[in-house]
Length: 344
Image (cartoon, rainbow, N blue to C red; front, top):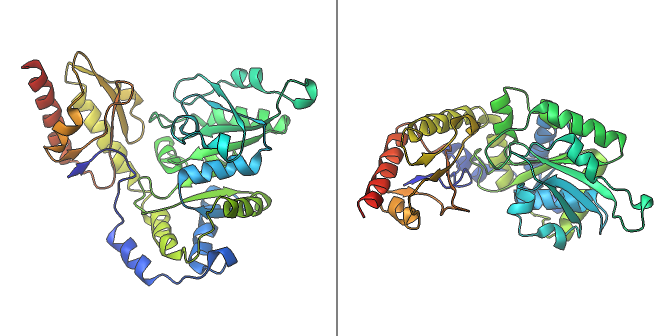
């Protein structure tokens, strides 16, 4: 099967499987797991932060960041189409007990003046919560990348106003690949960052939260509250190490394949797609005048896994196991589906 539902579907490489089998482990709640320690040290180094903490998932890492940065009842400013808002099951209201103050914007790029209009200080008015945190997402889940200059001006403003900045960097390395920069050039304009090992990098499980040493120590305690204190986690950490050491560079292939697929897809008259917005490994598109009710089943019968449309929009995601030779088959099946619909 060709699986283009997401880059979370990647299977671990053979080298990862062997490393997991041989991993030296200990009890990570006691901070005795040498493999996890090595992973956390490497994660901090790559992102230019003081310390890091292994967590089970990206959602866990983002919500742990909110839980650690914010006081209950206070406010977080972020883009309205960010993953934290759209796809984390309202966890911020349950775990951190914070209010999300969203800003409508394109591709997660929040204009600074929109943030300034929404920042509130509790001492200014009895009716106000305090703005504790600004959350950015890079690469954004729309498949676009936030310019570093936008992150820089937001961070400078946040520093001046004593507001923390957290980056949902689930696809941090995709963003760095697109911008052709060291990841530290992105993360230096943040106080904390979460990045995923299991999106595109082929690790089977896990994400990492990075920040100052003090922040991570607080997060470690709150991770335990959330049930994320893992024991012999080094079996997972071993795959994460290979993900960081060997799987970032191949993301270029995923991006190139996505661009090649988009260029072929845009030749189909029924497809609404802007190839310029294909910046990482994601293609978002619509089918004009075509009912997509049965498209998922149609593709599955032809050995391609896709997601159902969301708000009439479809998404194809290339990943490590989707090869250039698969592109022609995907386009062929897409044409077949449109022809079947036209022919009743």
